[in-house]
Amino acid sequence: MRVTVEQIDRTREEELIVRCYDPSAAWVSSVTEAASDHRTICGWQEDTMHRLRLTEIFYFEVVDDRSFLYTQAAVFEAKEKLYEFERLCAGSALFRCSKSMILNAEKIDYVRPSLSGRFEAVLSNGEKAVVSRKYVADLKRMLGV
Amino acid sequence: MLMNNITLWVRRYVTVYGIIMLCTFFMCLLFNPTSELPVVTFFGRIMVFTLIALLSLAVYYSKDELTVKAWWVRTALHLLLLEAVLLPLAHFWGFWHSGTDILVYAGFILLAKALWHLVDYGLNAKTAAQINERIRKNRLEKRT
Image (cartoon, rainbow over all chains, first blue to last red; front, side, top):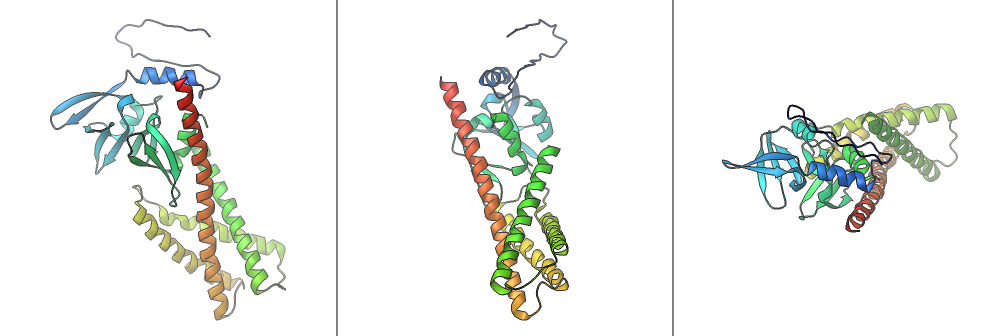
């Protein structure tokens, strides 16, 4: 495989493009994960700002027009709207899972169906999140099912 | 996303059509085994029933994610809507005539709806199993 590293000046945005035969290959997820590990977002707890890595985030949720970031054991308020956060985490393990939530696929312990036609994702910290059927195809594609 | 939606609705249409056919078969077998049906008209009417059943799913539409309680309320509403639309239409097409018939027909609509949710649950259970298997494999790959 050919590896190209190009040095750019500070005026341009850093970018990683992976050209591969199989996007679900383990090495591809390792590379995108490593890249997304460097992406950060600001989370607020009262007046204190915290810089959070995308890989730390379990899910992003909008409740009553306010955005929240959930990590292993803490909740932060975010300034971003759902679509802005969705754009920010493109190419990472975070995916839109319902009308108001973006979930980190890497934090899913397992999923189970519910009678309401949706899926319940049990996360590694024991929390549960709803995955709409509409977005399950995205999760499958992301995991390589 | 568009392709996903098309696949989902085609799958729903085929599933509902199959369930209605199955219910009709058992309804005829149990209550009117000597009935003869005009094939083209009959299949066409079942297609219309299926279309109505799918259109009535609009009851579940919500701007926000439905809570479990809201889902149950809408499921009850959906059943009422199905009964309210399909019973008169079936009567108009001569699928039922007397007072006892209407109870049997209403019961089969309820059964068909329950079956639809069960089939849906089964398909989702299969998808969940595939996802869980993949998660397990990904974890193993990461460890090694």
